[in-house]
Image (cartoon, rainbow, N blue to C red; front, side, top):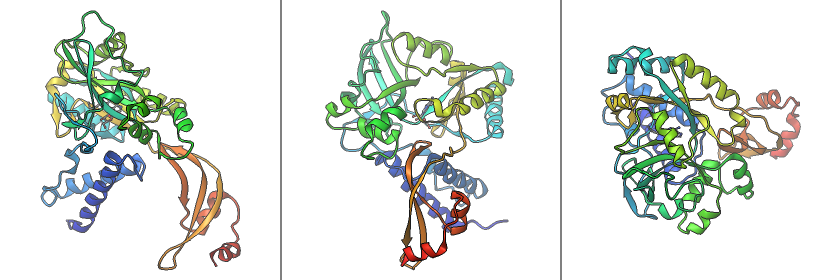
Length: 376
Ligand code: IVH
């Protein structure tokens, strides 16, 4: 039996907490989602192999960030959840199997919805008798920040629902984001690392006049407490659309995993053409009474999963190569790149770890002599 890698585990926990803080509280991630997912998978693997030694640690059950002191706090009437990830078809089969077992039904007895996982910020919109009264960030899932004044400036979000018989009260959830094109226009001074940070920074402004000038968009992907719901998630979203709430143009129904994988492959192929950053698809059990029966495990619903795309690769130009010399005298060549958006992160530097690699990658022979001269 392998020995519990205590030190490694502690470092991993610290590392994940560090990146959580950057992502959720400072809007400035240093690593891509794919790299973050690798850390999480490593954490989960160690927890699985050493359940007793790692019992005390449950960082995955704490959602997102905490509400900052900049805004007043808002207690969500229904908790805002997170999603488990599926990285492979194997993971999807397990997802379906668990649902089958739990509902005591065959896989063919329940269908799914599918829509892109938008890389933005989730918000909770509270409508009372059809009027938008509060908007709040997710925060830790239970307590978020009250950002109503800022959200009111977003044109996509109706202040009054377009219906003669609005529900007495409803929480509509969705993603606020900035399109890739709008990001390029907005970010001429490279202030933000990616569209998600730009959306988050724009939304959490103390002066709503600043928010009003930012090209924020909204797409709904769920709802909280609501007594007059339809029988399926898909139909519910279509009703939202008739009320003037934007929903995903890629929202689809699927009969089984085969259909879902077909949709996944199609969307993955045209990912670059989709005007905003997405990092996978979200599948949900479509029948709402099944969703209610399936309920929640930890911080995620049993009835939904995020099927992630493999990390994106991209090509760009190397503008120049600088040589960095570390404290110990170690020499690291760093490529300065023409900035490129890879999976939502604006990349403008790449560390080139050794000269053979550089030679392979840029197809040009780098003369070691020249590099030595630059070093000196
Ligand atoms: S469903 C039901 N659908 O992803 C539980 N979330 O990792 C959660 N997200 O906090 C929401 N696109 O901010 C759902 N089509 C989509 C989504 C989506 C993006 C975000 C959302 C959520 C996070 C979970």
